[in-house]
Length: 121
Image (cartoon, rainbow, N blue to C red; front, side, top):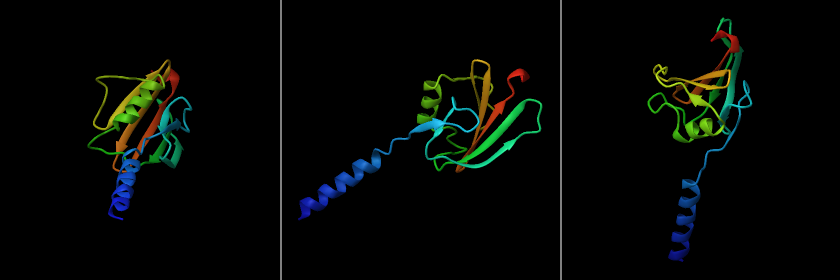
């Protein structure tokens, strides 16, 4: 009986540790990934000459201290986006793919994606 309890505990730990993060296209650009478990909290068009629109996603792994989760960075680069090194400001990081530019700002429990107007560079 004790072995069954230990086996159940091991199975539980293995499944809990294997909570792989999956990704899908964002609502502002299908080519920019967001975690599947991140939920849209707010989407706005921006009255700004450089930004087209932004969206806020609630996601429990978002953090101001750790910035972007490592698996999220890997997904962004796997989707073909490159980070603009040296342009990060605090929790703001900027990625580009061809003529497209998207910035991501992380906060505790959520992140914000902003899509730059392509001609604004």
